[in-house]
Image 1: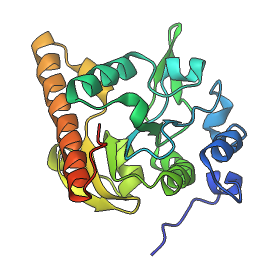
Image 2 (image 1 turned 30 degrees about the vertical axis):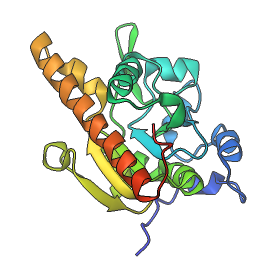
Image 3 (image 1 turned 180 degrees about the horizontal axis):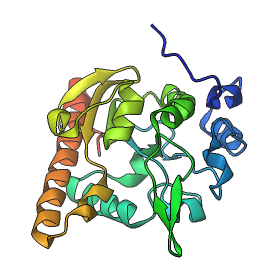
Image 4 (image 1 turned 180 degrees about the vertical axis):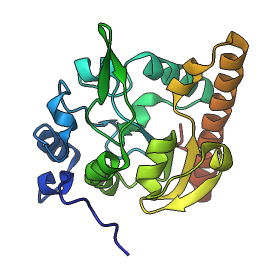
Length: 223
């Protein structure tokens, strides 16, 4: 059964012939929920057009909102580092978010990240669906609970599903791990390091799974 969209959503803005360039252009004018009102700009996904692996995060952060690119802030730099250690080239994957506008609340002079609601995630889901329908990834990596909720259409617990390979609507293999920003929430440096090492292990499993699939197909171009 198809997921019921909210009365107002990004579905009204999806172009008739979706490609990554036409989707990105159309998303710049999206008013499918109220988040566009306080965001600087839409932050669409970026990366290889035919990526075998797609990473889905929650939403743009402060730096992403300013620069207009996904995962360019502290969490993005940590993701870059983990990808290198796991043996995955960032320029061979596609990286996007479940929600394309930055949701925030003021905290002094700072803009503090605020988690998007289920309704906002649902309203933005047509953009993610369209991206994934164009790319057809072999492996879909959900970074955090909001990404997993958008992909799977239900609330999931990270500690119960982390690192497990499963099927989803848009990829034969989907795996859930933490969002790299969660590593910074640990107060102790030892906790941060332990969580980071586990994150790298999760990404290493993704790389091995991809290589396994490439060998099955008799190819050797896996990252």
